[in-house]
Image 1 (tube, each protein chain N blue to C red):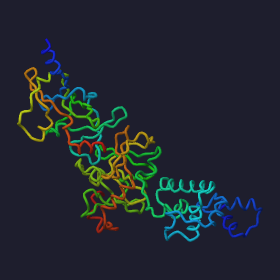
Image 2 (image 1 turned 135 degrees about the vertical axis):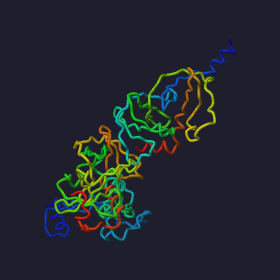
Image 3 (image 1 turned 120 degrees about the vertical axis):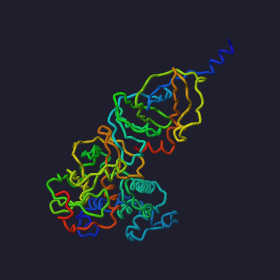
Image 4 (image 1 turned 180 degrees about the vertical axis):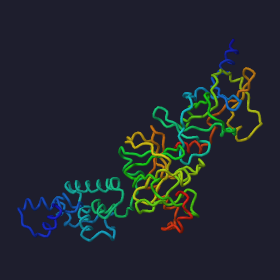
Amino acid sequence: MAGEQAPKNRKGHVKRNPLVQSYLDDLFLPAGEAGKPKAVEEAVNTPKAPPSGTTETAGSVSREQQSSTKEVTEAPSQSPVERVSAVTEHMAEAAPVEVPVATEVDVVQAGNTLITQTPEVRAFPEWSEYDFDSLIFEAFGIRLAAPMERLGGIHALEEYEKISLFGQPDWYLGVVSIHGQKMKLIDSAKLLMPERGYKMTLEEAKFGVQLNKTDWCLACHSLKDSIMIPNAQVQWRKKREQRPWFIGTLIEYMCSLIDVERLVEYLDSLTPHPLPKEPANSDETDKGA
Amino acid sequence: MSTQAVKGAEDAILQWVTFRLDNETYGINVMQVREVLRYTEIAPVPGAPPYVLGIINLRGNVVTVIDTRLRFGLMSTDVTDHTRIIVIETENQVVGILVDAVAEVVYLRQSEIESTPNVGNEETAKFIQGVCHKNDELLILIDLEKLMTEEEWAELEDF
């Protein structure tokens, strides 16, 4: 509702008490301008050499936005201006920490200093910052865990028709059609711990753990538990250059915790060519039926 | 008296925890041993090198367990009632080593320790700090720091 009033005020369509109008204007101005005292505008009008570093502005920022940031950063070092500059600098420092990806709005809020920054990617996903529900499942005695909120579903595979496909990687079990969606079934142990030498067959796959809303499904022998894991009960991996999908270990349950997004990225990277949407001949290739 | 005292001071007595692996007795400095555990379930870790069996939960801390037999170039064997995990503390970190059995703690004078004979596999020989004849038995003393290379120790920190 407040958002709807802002343009009207700025265009002068609605006439209000000047005090109320001023208050509302302050509220609805862009963040870079918000709270700016009138002394700043007056100070900007006085001719003064601009400080270094304020002349470069990204092309994506509008002229109005550029002028608003310039007004603040070019202000002379008088006490009210110093306060505003300090706030602006603080925002410029704080913004990249709090916001994973720098957007155009963030740039305006933070002033000119943020414009050249590239989008940041969090080392750890947001769910890892809090306690989280986790599903523990098992394949060949290897226990794995995944955050529930990053799972698209858990499917009992015996209810569905499973089809194996020729010429696929050894960790790829086949396709299972679940509610009309063709899920790609992955041999969890073979993909995630190939050094153990386990190989699941399509018949052995009892449950499928769907990764997010994708069509990737981790096959497992059994589901063990669904539990709330306190953040402190995870030994988070410090270095994740190798196996970035392996984010940590659940200490109490001694199982590897999966970063679902990174695993999906990894799986997508392994399959540059999309798998066929329709199996060629289901009668010949279906070993599980 | 003074010469004997100096000799005694130089010839320090060290304590060694001995363990058995495939009919051989090995010793590690007692100062590096934190505790000895009965065999407990070892959880596998994704991407672990072959000499890493997995991890155990030691009172809320994750401890990596090394396959000592594999490291020493020996054939693997089944876990028995005597199988133990010796939790050791090296300069870098705390790890567990899986052994067939833990025997005893022996006292050895520095002068009793002989240098390593130049025989056997070069890979495994580098772990050997020295040997000692005790009770008609050859005791092989292990230098735990050399059990793995710096890169391998660093890799263990990532589990």
